[in-house]
Length: 121
Image (tube, rainbow, N blue to C red; front, side, top):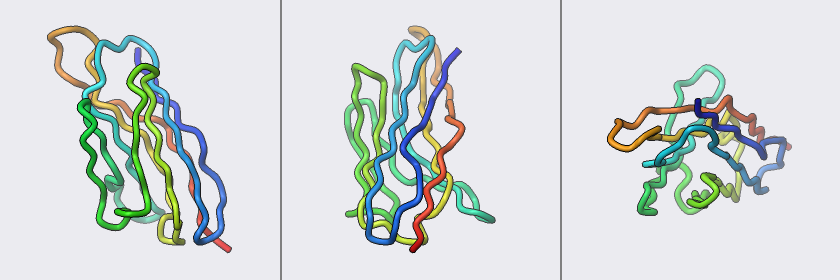
């Protein structure tokens, strides 16, 4: 079994910062990629940022220059540093991991339960 647990959400004023963290645990052979998605009320879930096993990163245009994704490979964690937050960043943020549970197996997408981020004055 594999679990992803997010932490760090909350309420912040526009222009403020938050740091989200996600820890993967369980029967893990390799994590190919980790990512953050978000889903605002009434909208579809969207990719925010992704980091590969090699450290390559990609960001949604709406967060480029404001958000930074990073990984701790030894601890199987991924972090999203969010700066200059805007009201439109308000959403539930989900951690995602493409994880292989044993050598030679395909990767499976695992999801955390999500953490609420609210940007409001």
